[in-house]
Length: 245
Image: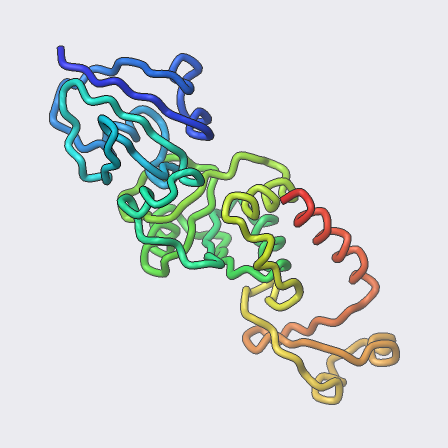
């Protein structure tokens, strides 16, 4: 039977059995197949792959695997210029869409100023469509969802704690320099705008009217934000998130 030799590098080890990690191994080639289909059948979603080097030459996902090929696979964060063969460059800072199991992560991303879409009842079809049509990075812990062909940008979130998840995403997309805290509505994701105190006075609690003068408002859901008693706690949280990143 025909075979190829494959090696997964770096964080791609997260998706393959121990005997396949960071080493060359033989794999049978029993049918005509694209390299994308072959690699995904071995574990990693295509969104996690940053470069594919076949016999010393970088190739795209459409490459048809041939008998005897030596296939080295690098993770998305290490792909460099070769990643352009796999997908268009991702604009910075990226925008995100998150699956239904990452509700706390979306709150933290919005707190840091990032465009993060989240619908509690969205199914996999909807998530994939939003990611594809709006060019958003799909964040999920569902490997199968990331293997959908229409998904161009995606990331499998390894951590389970929301704070550590946030730091992980900041590291993966090198976002520490793009943090703009308190500029996006935590509830609906809309950028907030400065608003005069007198324009929202009738919506403020008595102590808020007395002690605070600077406010921001969400033009979509009318949420009001100010530097209240929670502000220092939020600054501490932001420090932890960006420090870990």
